[in-house]
Length: 186
Image 1 (cartoon, one colour):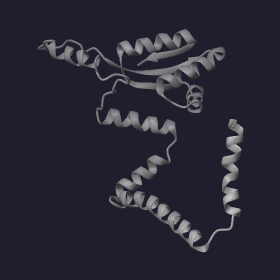
Image 2 (cartoon, one colour; image 1 turned 120 degrees about the vertical axis):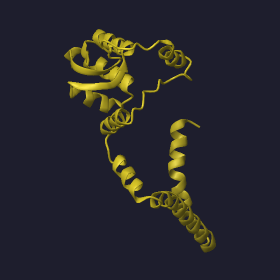
Image 3 (cartoon, rainbow, N blue to C red; image 1 turned 90 degrees about the vertical axis):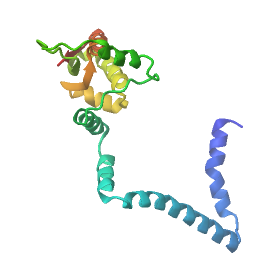
Image 4 (cartoon, rainbow, N blue to C red; image 1 turned 180 degrees about the horizontal axis):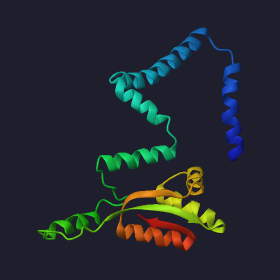
């Protein structure tokens, strides 16, 4: 059976079942089963929401945010709570040597000037012809949807990422520069 025939059969099957005469006992059992499933579904969320009204209001407010607002919320919480960016992909094989390196360095008694290690990347502008490429790269870098990536790129100048290590920031700048975008490290 082809895919379209299967789709049509699935769509029409409930209609045939509904038109078939059914005993009152079977119909009552079906409706009570549906009611139990619906109440179970609603009860599962209600019990969690009624435990703490403060948390439930926060969850409701976060649920109403757009994706860009949620990304801004996450970056603000990371900076306010001093949460470092976690590398995506591996189980920390490359993160362990990076964490061990600062512990090996002896601390100086009087540092002359502290070098900045974390930077903010800001998308300043882009070439009009390379807009689709820039949108795709922003989508890949920030993990946004295509629509949100387009809105993000069109609202330039805008901060792309905050608290990025220098090496990673330079790689991102080179990638965006190759695509025709101007990204600055702050």
